[in-house]
Length: 362
Image 1 (cartoon, rainbow, N blue to C red):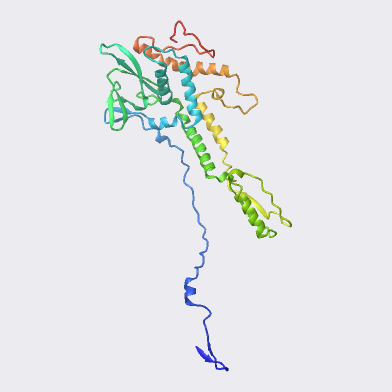
Image 2 (image 1 turned 60 degrees about the vertical axis):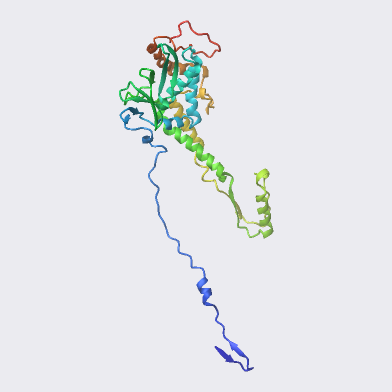
């Protein structure tokens, strides 16, 4: 619309805003809505069905599959320091007291004992010459051996597509007795598996927690009006330079006429750090030692009480008498099957270079 002013100059009225500005304006934020959700039911770290089947079952009507997952149990061997160490201390004492034989070396016996302690089964293969003479005894890894449907045949199954059968009567099978079946042995420490995995997961969580870097993070919240922009910039520069070589350096802040709580340090990891990591590790460690029945002083554990754990020499002798001598008796059954004294042990002693006994069978 154009009008004439008294001076004869035209005047044009301009709208206060354009339609385009209204179209490009940001939409109004949506109102916040309350949202409710719930967590699922508690789930174990590793369900028991991941390890146990309903008894032994046959694969292709040729051999039985074990009642637990052998590859998973092999990975569990090194899942935690205490679980693997408990097995290793038993093996080391057995190997130390073992007397080598021309048919069975100390290295071969070490492999045989490890299989028995980890899987509850061990297999010793008899190697015969062409004339039928026994030449050597060789351990067959328990992880890959399967027992046949008639219980007298044994198969070597390293992969799902590769299989071969052992010669008839060539394998000696020692097993840890199970209350549910007689085909395979079952190790006694399976009751401690949940504690083993919880201990491992607690360690992995803590490693990820530190790798994430939130353990050293914080938020500096400044709401003090007495601060000016130069002070804020100086603080920002000081915090940026506290990385690398200057990490964890001290910062000095002067705030004249500042008010209380005008500057706050809020740690990001304040809540996450309260997961009782040490308590979880200690409780699961004790469960593992109970599952293996190992005295804590043999594992190098530092006692928390002033009285300590007692005499380590007495604990070692009681441990060998109650736990390892029965295992030695199990291995001595090989002598009955072979008809000769191949498995021999020295009496346990903490003294070095003990001579072999005149009657080595115990």
